[in-house]
Structure formats: structure tokens, C-alpha cells
Length: 198
Image (cartoon, rainbow, N blue to C red; front, side, top):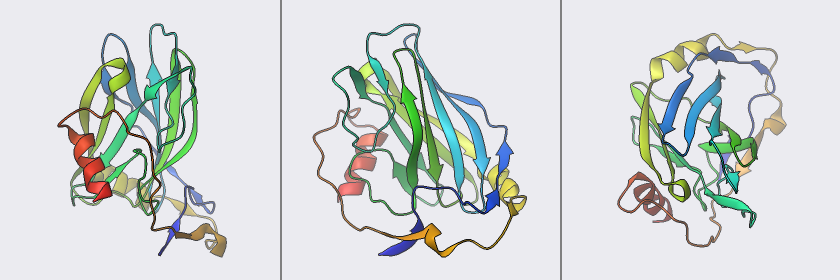
């Protein structure tokens, strides 16, 4: 097992805000965008917002196999791909090692948001965010981001004091069994899910 920072940002750092507000996906039924980006020495915290003009169901922004309410939509699909081939997703059964960790979130009928912490920092070159929401007919969409912007911000992070020992935990090497998930056939999420369970 590996020692990692488990689902949390460093408590001993003042992060650097990065003005990367960008639309990730847009249809007549739904808009998704990236906002509130904060860079730490070891990763990036950010929020994805969702809006619909009207809806009769709650927006399920949670992912990671979290059971949905009967009043909720199908889950929002989100993933990250680095230039070195590393892939992290909010799909069920993902290994809880370095990667994508879910934070606070909410989902009403027309407004939803989800905060993530992504570690490690993106390596050099560009990296991508991939989104889809099959329930609402939102196809897979890829948005490329410049790693240099995040690396520069990480250099300006202020460390307040040494990191406490409790910040690192042992990462489990197991996977949970989850019910079948609706993924866009032949797309990135199907590939990422297959890669994660092999």
C-alpha cells in the first residue's frame, strides 16, 4: 500500500488561485463549467458547476459509486488524463490512490456543483478534463489545459509549517463491487473504466 494524502488538501498551505473559468460542456439541456481553481504544492482543487433551465430530477454530481436518490438523475461522469498517460475518474470502483478525490457537492433540480482534489500536480505539457452526462444526453467532451500554468502557481504556494504526520494515510489496494453504470459506448469513459478494472 502507498502513503498518500487521502481526499484532502494540505492543511499547512495557502494555495494559489488560478483564473481558469471555462465551459466544459454545453447543450440546450445543460451547461457544465470549471471554476474556483486553487493550486497546492501537491495537487489542484477545483469545482465543476452544472446548470439546467428546468428539471424534474435532482442533479447527481457525486460519482464514485455513491448511491443515488430515486429522485436523482443518473450520475455525472468526470475524468482527467495527463500527458504521461495517467488517468483518474469519478467512476465506481476506482482505486483510492493518488488521483481524483471528491469533496463537497450539492445537487438541486437546476443547480449542482462538485469540488474535487486532484493529485499529483499535472506533469509537463497539456492535460485534459473529460465530461459526459448520458442521462441528459450530454456527449463526451474533452477540454485541454496548460500544465505550465499550474506548475507556475505551485511555485508560489506558501507553506505555513511542516506537514503533520496524520496527513498521510495508507491507500487501500482493493476495489468495491458496483452495479452496472451507463457509459457512452466506445468512448473515453468506457476505455478508462475497462483500464481501471483490468
